[in-house]
Image (cartoon, rainbow, N blue to C red; front, side, top):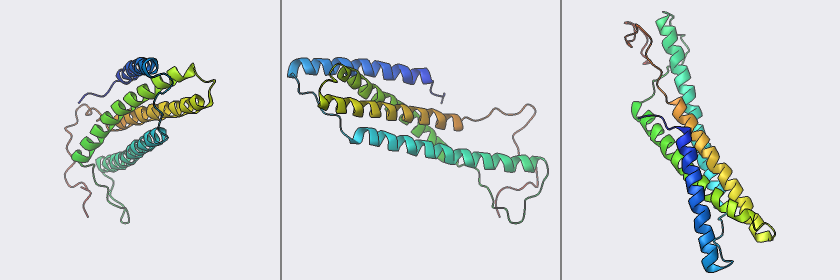
Length: 182
């Protein structure tokens, strides 16, 4: 899988924002002043998803760092400390699931940021009424939470990027090296 380009997510956000803006204007034209309300749960849900994806990224980064340190020590011929906890490598299936989570989260974040961004742009022209001010504020928070979800997804993809093999390295662990099993 190729990494998601941030420009694709930004373009998706802008395209969805334009579509959202046009649909809301059309809705307003047909139904007068009865546009749909923005749920309070929208920014909260997006923010929780962003925090969860960011948490997965931090957890995997810590595990990758620990595993790289152990591999470096093994390559240098250093022995394992007696009280050191063994470090297991990342399961490839777990990494693949995290990558799918990152790709899906980036797309979901860009779509929802676009929806609430376009809705918020429509509401900017109606800030004189109190109800529209609160709706615009919710749209702004939902847009920011969607942008945070995009950022967390891009960071998780960055964490999961496999480094290129070193020149001359065959990728094998030296014989007699610690395999992580006790």
